[in-house]
Each structure stands twice: as C-alpha cells, then as structure tokens.
Amino acid sequence: MKLLGEKLYLRPVALSDVGERYHRWMNDPEVTKFLEVRFSPQSLNDVRSYVEKMISKKDEPFFAICVNETHEHIGNIKLGPINPHHKSADVSLVIGEKSAWGKGFASEAIGLVTEYAFKKLALNKLKAGCYSENEGSARAFEKCGWQREGLLRGQAICDGKETDVVLLGIKFSDYKSGIKNNA
Image (cartoon, rainbow, N blue to C red):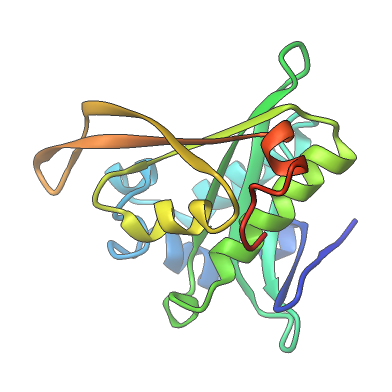
C-alpha cells in the first residue's frame, strides 16, 4: 500500500528501514526535543524492536514518509491506535531528516493520513497533541484543516520547564465540508 502525494509518498515502515539513519534520528536531541523517546538513549536494537512491534499492530498503521524524487525515507507518521467503537484515532509523526524541515513535508504527510483515515478507513475523528513550543507541528496540522481544540496546562516538561500541550483535532464532517485548507 502506498499513499501518493505531490512531493512525497507514504508506505508501511519496514524492518529494512531500521539502520544508522533511523537510529541517528532517535538519538538526535533536536529531532527528539518534543518526543517522549528523548528520555532514554535508543540503541539500534531498541529502534528495531519498536518497529517490529509497530509492524505487528493492525490498529496502528505506521508509515514511512518518503520523498517522491529520491525515495529518501525522511520520517514516519502513525495513525492510531484506532478505536473502532468511536471511529477515532491519534496521529503522530516525526521528520527525522533535519534537511527536510520547513519544506511542507509534515503537512503533506498529515494531509495524506487524514484523507486515508476518513476515506479508506471511514473514521469520524482524528486527534493529535504537541507541546506549545512546537509551533511548527501545530501549524502543520492546521494547514490540513485541523483545529486547536484544547490546552493541557503544565502537562509536560520540556527543557526543564513546565509546558502546555496543545490538543488538535479534525472531524470527518469538517473535512468533508471543505474546512481543510491544504491537505
């Protein structure tokens, strides 16, 4: 399965993706600044075990974000866990290749996963969260029609200080009615 966009495509993450590049991402303080993985060093074996676990999950599609022109794997995006009763899921992502930051890849990946979730999986609601300092992440979701739905004050610690977590979401009815901007 491949989700094709203008500048990138999404395909399932494979064990063959686990190598020095992926390992470097998970240990780079700039890349992991807003990720929970930052709290403990990640060995290549840790990364491999995580990918093996994710590949085995049927309720959490886990995609590699790849550039169309070069097929370079620049990050990952995950949908789930999917709650079949409420027809909802979380979305989380990382752009590991810093040279790919600021080029719209996160927004495009979010747009592709949003479309897949609503059109192929018939979900009704998607949600995500990010630290308030991570404005780039919030903007990437908002470009795809997601809205800020809440704020968890002092929910996390970032750089040794309390930080808020911004909650974002999108409903299928909003997506369908064209509220999405640039997905």
